[in-house]
Length: 168
Image (cartoon, rainbow, N blue to C red):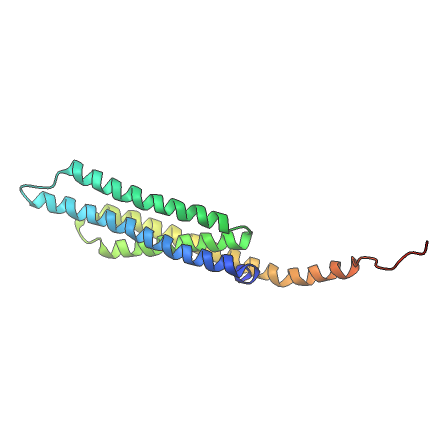
């Protein structure tokens, strides 16, 4: 809340960039799931899919997406100039990760994906904990924001400049 009130333009820009971040997280997850499905399909197909070509294509897709994510991450770091905005960025990243992992978990369905399911469930739990911590930090910043304006007004009244002209 303090982040939105303190610098609303940066807050809106962060929110918009976090939406893009979430989309790219989902894209990475879908590329991974697509690769797993193609590997499973290649086992059933006698011709099969060339595994090297598949791995190369998956790596190229992931690299392209990670390049875009790095650009957004740099932009988010530039926009997050104070603690409350940094907390908003952390919270948004964890929520995007949680959303992506949850969707991948719903898609994962075969026995071979059990290891992936366990890994994703662990990531989901850690993301939930991180979200809780980030939300607590934001509440702390909101409490500080309520007390800071009162503290700032008192020193300003005491430190008024002396505008009286001195006799020569």
